[in-house]
Length: 386
Image 1: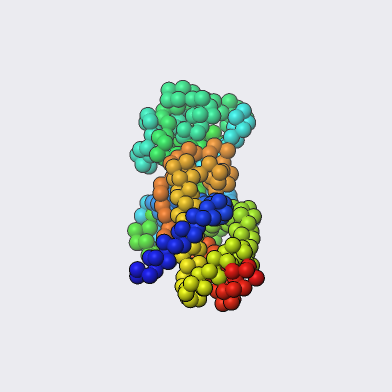
Image 2: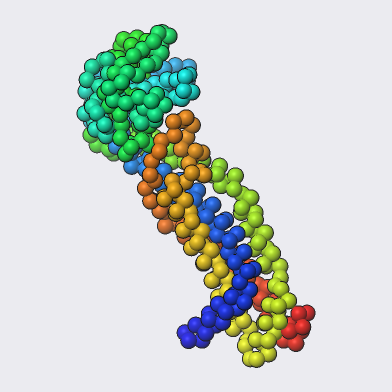
């Protein structure tokens, strides 16, 4: 152990003698790791936040298909679904999208009925009648509106529509409610000029979570023109979307990977004449090949581990303290009203270990291989730089 510590001490002094060269390597190395780690940390955090919220959603969402496309579903279907054993609450939903041409923004419109008590993360109160609505902070900012003011829109018939704003969602729910406008179900049905007896979809509660796939199959058999979507399918879809977007970001920053590969390759193709002379002197004063390799391994480990820790720390600050301003617009989605929220520090240890494995080990290997070639060279030739 003492011998290893002495070699490590000598490695640190050797790196200090070439501090400018090693510092430039650490800077490039750290930047590469920071880019990759930022994408991984941001994706995992958004995915974790999405999963935590979606897991409390409906067990099954039933949509009606016509010509392979989503169509309005008769509310009478809810009575058929309620008769299936194991099914609890069945609720038709009215919702849709609205484009505000004045502010060039998209809003999500949702009608609420008896479940209005679930929406508690608001400043103000939920809509009490058809003349009131509740909005997210993004809508409030776009409309320059607040509680007590009127929200002016254009309904499905092209007629001006006005309703009183009864409340504004708090920032804690911005991820899901930033572009959301809540009406009563009857008011939203009139706003969209939706015929009576129809809804956008139907949510289904299943008492036993293990019976959700079986219930979905029964719904499909009883109502062949529907598409039951289970909570597991929704979670899998969101996970795939975030994985695809993170893959897109990693593809964009492939250039940083190429730069790192060039750096490692340059390190592997040879060492400087000064380093060869140093190895030759060490061999001449009694160091064996194993000691030389241990020395170079320590040097590579110091540089790579330092760069890895600095890079991951930079990624942590960028993602969780600065809210990832460089990558968030791509990974959040298409909405114009980007929600402002503080990312919760979710870290996947497996991803960090894999990132370290793919970045630390190659550099250490590229450091040891050329040193081994110099170590087995005759000391006299090595000191001459031959």
